[in-house]
Structures are given as structure tokens and as C-alpha cells.
Length: 336
Image (cartoon, rainbow, N blue to C red; front, side, top):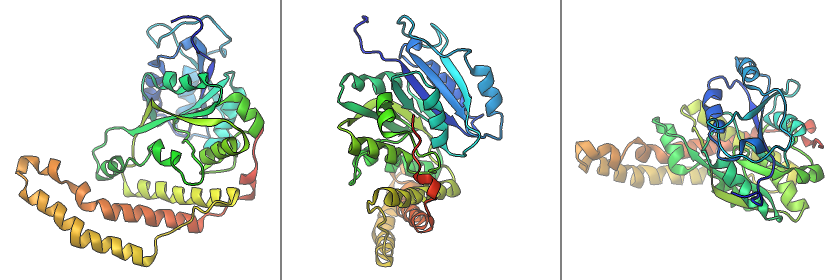
């Protein structure tokens, strides 16, 4: 490595709400990053947690933010990472917490992930590399599933629910999710920060403002990987898809884009009939014919129940779309 290598100062902002069970693993992932420890700060923002999050963050925090020190590369074996403990106790919103972190940051690149994510060791290095191209204003990395054993986790993994490839292919405008996203600080000074009172869809809103108001481009850094645990209960899964529906409604009201299509009754009935008459018998036959030792591999419950789970998710999203009402305060954009 030489001093001419592109290594900007980076600030990683992580909102945390009731994160005491997630923080130990997250911190180990941050300590394992290959990006030079002297070129990055990690700002963990407690957002009105009710558990031991604030106590844990106090014990982890570094006394001072980094200046611009000499280059060195490596994780915890070489040096300690810089962790800054912040709190957003006014607004209960991950976007308000991210804004708190952005305002306190010192980096020219602002990266985002979440407390329940597990960044791979080269995550930050691969996420930052594309910014060497001055036309790139946003980078987003891939979001893959952590191993899960429940039926619903397997379903979400099979559908690749959280992949950035879905959001990058959005028909209105591409965007990346804040679980794995980075933005140039100078752009935030131009278009503003997150809408602090928005509860869903803030990542799309920010990316759309950047891509539609500036000439900057978005880049998919596929090797910048974070892993995320899928929802393991039906209540959690329905809540996730209900929030997707709310996001559709909010973005529709903020940007005038039609994201509101719902399945008709006829479409629901057709999908159910197809499942009952075609998909279910085929999956059941595979399971019956397979040798006992291979039945799980050949056809498990995910094969049998994939369609009805998907329809439940679509229904939850539709309910979220119908019920959501954008608060007037959610139209506000904070400025750097």
C-alpha cells in the first residue's frame, strides 16, 4: 500500500434501539474491518433505548474523535477502533438518530449500517472504493441473510427479500437501503439530511433526492456485504411487510410516484388456486418420492408453503398502504 491509495476519512453511523443483544457481535464485526482504523470513526447513536444499550455504549466509546492521523491498516489486533457514543432522545426515529450521527461526524464519506447487521471484514473497504470516481455520490453494498432455521427465515432467504438488487431496480428511481449505504458528505450539505420524523422509506427518499437533484450516480458495490437476520415469527414478518406498505404510501405522497398497486380479489384467488392445484401437489410428490434421508433437501415446508406466506406478506403490505397517513412533520428535511 502507498500513500497515493484512495483512503478518505470515513464516518460510520449506526442507530441503535434496544441493541444490547446485538452490540457485542456488531462491535466484533467493526473491529474486524480491513479499512485503516486511523481513517474511520464509528458513531453509535442510542435512540431512546429501554435496555442496557446506553451503558454498553458508554463503556465502548473513545474519548476523542479522530483527526487525520498517519495511515495504518488493520483491526483490533493492530489498534483499537474509534467508537463515539451519541444519543437522540427527542425523536423516536432511526432517521433522526442517523442525522444526529451525521452532524457529529468528521468524515468526508458517511456510511450507514444497523445494529442488527453483521458487516463482513472487507465491507467498509469495498463500500468506499467506488468513491475514487468523482461521479459516484452513493454506494450501496449487498445485504445477505444470516443463517436461520425457522420456516419464515428460510422463506425470506429463498426470496432474497433484503437484497439491494430489488431496490436498485426500482421502476421509479434506484435506491439503496441504509443497512448498507454510503454517501458523500458534501452531497448531504446540498440536498439535506434524512427527514427526521419519517418512520419508513427514508433511505429511498434520500437517494431519490440526490439522484434527481444532482448529477451524481449510485454504484452497487456487490462485494461490500453485510448480513442480516430475517424475521423468525409471523408477527415480525407481517410487521416488516406492513412497514413496506407504509413506506409506499409515504413515498407516494412525498414524490408523487405511483407505488400503490394492490392485488385484486381475483389475483389472490388465482394464486391460491394455482398453489392448491399445481404447486402443492408437485412439492408433496417430491417429498413423498424422495428417500427419507433426502426429503428435507428435496422438498421441505418452504416448498409447500412458499405461496401462502408470500400472499400473507402482500396482504400485510396492502394494509400498510391503506392505513398509512404521512404526518405533516415528516415532510421536513433537516439541514447539515
